[in-house]
Amino acid sequence: MSGWEQIRWRKSSHSDHQGGNCVELGRLDAAVAVRDSKNPNTPHLTFDRAAFRALTRKIRSEAGLRP
Image 1 (cartoon, rainbow, N blue to C red):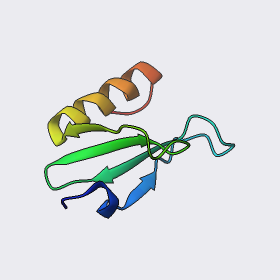
Image 2: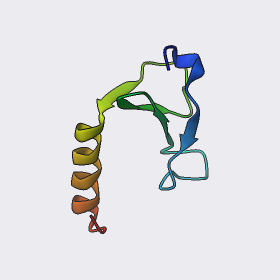
Image 3: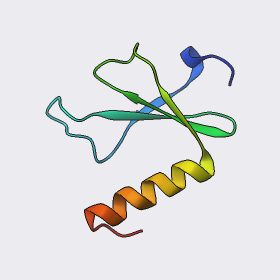
Image 4: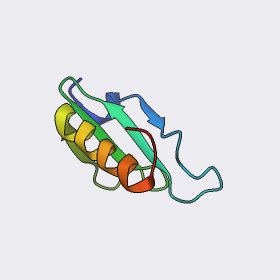
């Protein structure tokens, strides 16, 4: 995918469904994009797939969730 407008975003299953703490993920060819769903037009973070896996493992570990 080439443009941000072509990304199909999905809300994280761990997002707060009451309007706070919401992140959305979008799949790119070789990366994962992350944005704040409340402010979708603000800058996005982009991680290569290995970095995104490492990030999610760290978050899960710190939260006491399964790897």
